[in-house]
Image: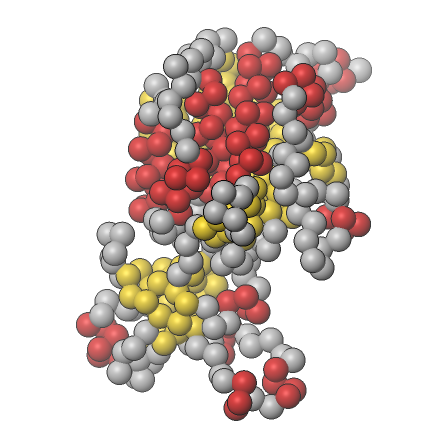
Length: 367
């Protein structure tokens, strides 16, 4: 019997714990607890990937999505008590300026100091200044320290990770499908994996081994996927991440006709195995799962990019969750897209359990 699952609450639980790349410990503990509800075994490798294993078949299928998030790191605290910092991951300085933040000074859920990336008041700026982007090197975090000594007493020192002080919420109506928050990139994929495991719970796969992997350090170079993929040696790997959705200033001509609420986007292109994306599209149609198609001509920028070329090569795919305002403290996604991503991945696992994909992959390889 499937377990009770509220994806909004799952997301809220994981997003309340910080996971700046390289400092994923707090969120890792929560991911482990969610995985334990479904997996035969849960382990953590040396770099911090959480690996949930179901079944014991000869061939293995890997699902990969990262749980690390964008953030900042304190680089220096000056004599006046202000923190100088650097971005961790691909931040746009325009969305960071004047953001309220949490400087993490310990390992507990309340072990933070509230600060703000200070902004010069409009009254004191010249018209030309208002049209310019303030670079990170000119930004400071004000956290009410009177001087460097007081900052040290508060626990703020070089190396402290920093996250936006933002929470998960419904966008618009309290009963609406759209939700807003930081770090959907890519904790929403981990939530989708939990939905996948819930879908498979009544009748877990027996013809293969399923490795559900919450990866780390994706935001600085897909490092968790490289380590876990090398160790697990999957026959087939499907990554999941967010992708750009049409939004004001973001046109379909640039990102594709991808919209919130219309289902996950199945990626096609050189980074992926045609036989696999074909199976996923067929399963989506057969099961009535809303889905979209995304053309990716080269580098996908996701864990799939690393997994495809590990060892002797891996059958690879990508299922993405549409997202507005990516890499900001206020990303927006559709809760139904998360649910349908989980359903699609479960259907794909079922299909792969009974197929070796030789109807395309092996034939093409021999020709």
